[in-house]
Image (cartoon, rainbow, N blue to C red):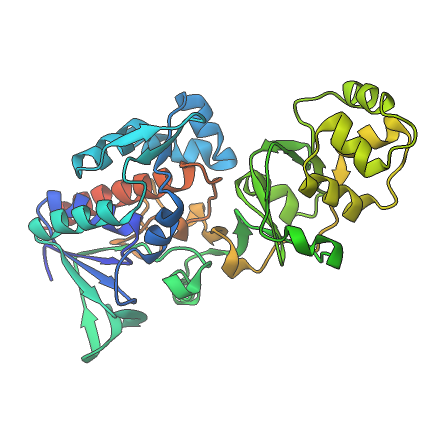
Length: 395
């Protein structure tokens, strides 16, 4: 298969790598274990596809924490503005929301994906569905296919198989032992952008599924503002996901139910309520707390103090007991994966010359809000271009 390239995995990172190699003149085959491509990408777009975030480069890079320096050159080549131009080049105009998050006007992922797949097909990229990678036979990649076992021996390969969450959509982490057996260091998977397990009492039954708005969350010295939701199994939502790292490491979680009001002002307002009022009535009248916030206070700190200062202190820093992260397969993404030391500067596996990796397979993590998807696209582009250069040197 001289001059031919293989991509295993058809999520955003894999398709970006495929396009980069096709543009370089390689004949590209993308294989996907599922019946249709980019299932997790499509699922992410059901509630509004957050492509990227429009903010200063320094602030954008800081979201990747210890991976910031490693990702810097890739995000310099494909950053937020590039992600916007890329979507618009596929006929999907974008808009920037009040928090800087960027979405396609259509909101959904499906129109963008259809246009992308059509463009890839026009550039000669072949997509093979229901091809599950099973490892190697000699130097060839082996697959289970609807027609039986198959083998491919390309000039270059980009692996883009995702992390280890949402297995039903294709990201099952089953590739990890295959690479480990070849001497590739793989860090254990850990949930990221995940919910927390909470055992609610019957008192909370009327509020299951309710959004919790205008709150600040604190864990491990970090603060996050954003909406969360109370579910039958715990708590989840964008405001929580930014605290994934400290929470999975065991940090306590506290909620500020009045993030725009100081503790002193809350206490002052509570002190003005008539002495005969119930605590719940005081919270409603003095602080305008909606029923869901009052229910949370009762759930987590019953019996509530009548003292205005003590009650205000609780409303500003309510401890929320939890049982740790929800199961990893429910997480939006995972940390862990191929160790960065196992990769060269072009994202080629040091133990497997000619084999590159991109996206969530790599050991980095990012919060939701556009950071995760932008870096997946950027690493896919970077790996695809490096693979094309490698193929050209070997031609």
